[in-house]
Amino acid sequence: MKVATWNVNSVRTRLNHVVNWLQENPVDVLCLQETKVMDESFPQQPFTELGYHAYISGQKSYNGVALLSREPLSEVSTGFAPLLGDQAIDLDEQKRVITGVLDGVRILNLYVPNGSSVGSEKYLYKLRWLEALRNYLQALGASSQEPAADSTSHSPLPTPHSLLVCGDFNIALEDIDIHDPTGREKMVMATELERQALRSVLEFGLADAFRKFTPAGEHFSWWDYRAAAFRRNLGWRIDHIYLTPDLYTRAIACAIDAAPRKLEQPSDHAPVWVEL
DNA sequence: ATGGCCGTATGCTACGGA
Image (cartoon, rainbow, N blue to C red; front, side, top):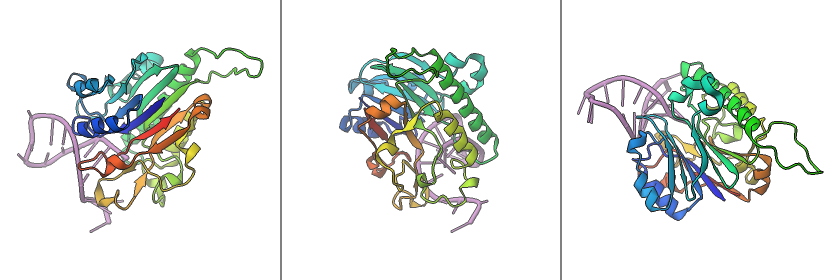
């Protein structure tokens, strides 16, 4: 199974890039972020013609996530509310969460808030959103079936299993995920509070698929449009794919495809894919 | 250099992004 994640920065503006990429990279599931389009205006047909089912959760102008899948997904839901109820109902006004199940693997596609600037209202919103994500994963683990008991292992913890969590996290978890981490304590996407919030989410038993294969730095998934950042490789690795232990063991490859970033009018993010 | 560049809205400027 091959799954990819890509912040496309408007699915309508990037439609040809996404269609062409899918033709060259016929992944089983493509997780999109920042679709920036209401559901009734989502360009379904080009993906249907490619053989993909589209599951979408969008809004006007901002945010928006989608799952494109070759096979139908089961148990599709959007937002935190299906598991958290009223606790996080206001966080669902921004469309940032969609999930579905394929071949026993739950795929959770996230667009984590950017946070604007350190200490701002949006920064606090980001931290609160990550706390809700932690609660969401806890609820997901508690509601999932325990694996069949055998003589060699027994897990009393409500750890979610066969879970793939991917998307634009808007957080560089390690200094090597930033081209220049100097002064990172003051930079949104790199502060200790954001990293702690993400680590707290990962404590449920999620590991970075990319780092299984690539321990070195200088590999990025986002480059600022300004200052010729891509040409100079002044990037950040903020688009991640996290796996529960069973899937982490299964993973045979994970990479960032920088090719679409070189095209005319590109998204500022590159797709990241994993093969299980 | 507290900016640069890009997409959206019913636009001629503001905002959100990261």
